[in-house]
Length: 156
Image (cartoon, rainbow, N blue to C red; front, side, top):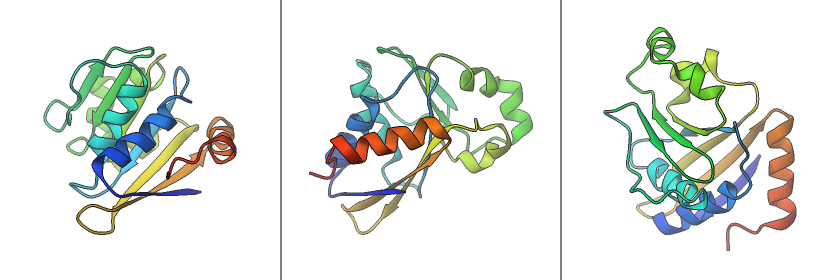
């Protein structure tokens, strides 16, 4: 598990941007954290690294937002869904697509999550500081985390 400290929303976005530069077609990231932890700031940084030019905001009421970049970005907030509703919406089709899936509240659909994924937990230390924990699930993300450790100091 990797751990990074963020001291501002911009810092959170910067960390996400560095991770975003390493993402490949079909990658899935899950974001866990309380309301206001910084999940949307993280996704904004990821989107910028993918070349998304549109404004990125929370998909709380729309469930899925799609963005065009060097790879499509699918930002999902599945808080209000159960697994049956997720299946009806075609979440699995997104997970099997060529895009990058970022899923907030992944515990709601844990049985349909791909075996390979990067689980990111964001915790609030105080009003501005956050701790980001990256847990790799599967070979693809074990390799990505090793690459991040070797070549990137994303806390600076």
